[in-house]
Length: 190
Ligand code: 5GP
Image 1 (cartoon, rainbow, N blue to C red):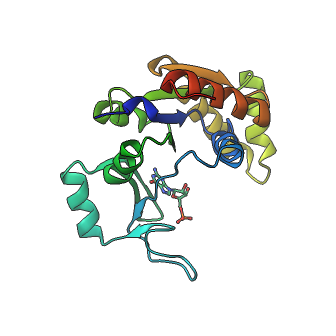
Image 2: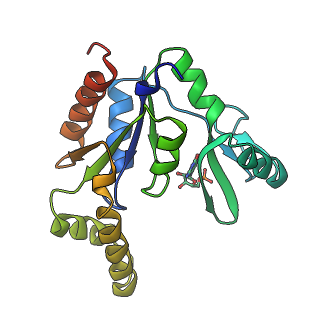
């Protein structure tokens, strides 16, 4: 579809700081679109349909998956969450930049659906630093830290399957480099 190069997938190993970098990017550039996901979990008090999520039944979610209407999805606490193709298309049609933050396993599917999209892998400054960040999260016992580190190493090995790589030395400068990269790859003016 048109403007596929306006779609950006930001991924990277657990602990690299994807959410913080994209949060800062959006604070600085609120024109960058955020998609509203579908979920099978019940709305929490104060949440609104179409604002926080599109709430749907398990059956409906399965149907959307079968129809290839879900770009990527995951399951947490027995509830499904997924990015809707219609949401992505709506923003791309309007000529907006769209950023999806996803784990390393979802990117290939997005590339299949949007071959013109840009996938960006965030790297830690070093594996030692990633270990420090994962430990810095605090409360976990040594066995779960070790498990997360093993996962992070196998996730890091996927970096070459992405179009671009960016080192997250520090959140603010990484967010700014990400924005420049997005402008360059989309051809949108800064
Ligand atoms: P919550 O139930 O607290 O709103 O979200 C639970 C988890 O689902 C969070 O980690 C959130 O990031 C994740 N999540 C929300 N929407 C999506 C989505 O569209 N795709 C994926 N893979 N995860 C999502």
